[in-house]
Length: 231
Image 1 (tube, rainbow, N blue to C red):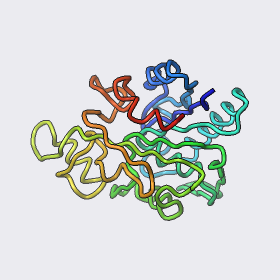
Image 2: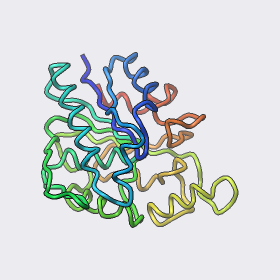
Image 3: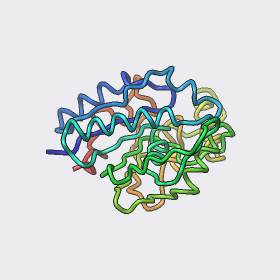
Image 4: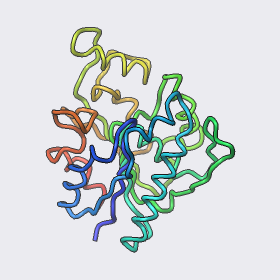
């Protein structure tokens, strides 16, 4: 049997947005569960505050999956911010976000077989996210844990330009990597979605959000691009 999959939603996204992805993975033989977040659960993290509440929910879900399926490891999928938050969760150094009273230690890398990140901005120049991402990249650069397979998936869909239809993408790319005139999924530029030492993939034509009316990373049409790494 394939290892179970835990899905961590992206920033300001709830678990219900990933129901179709869960169903598709289940059909392929991968029992899947999404961390039961609601969109409002992210509000406490706004402004670069601590992501500890999100990691606590992730930890609870992972431990429940380990118990329910009687396994020692799970596969972890992190969409958007869920990808770099997963890297904190796997880490062994104390994380003390803004307003946390003391450091927290999860050291979950031994429980993770594969980490798939979908459209994750692994770098950022945004003031409100830079502290957390600097913590991640200073302590766990690249594909840090050799026991974990890192697969980082980027989208090549929209080229950012300062014109109608691509202005939002341009601004998002610029705030993330400092360059607006580049390719990405409409939110995350390709160069920010990859990690040194990881299996870095680029899929053409996928949008960032699971709520998009177009194809996104978790659509059945594109799952084969990355799901094979979970076997």
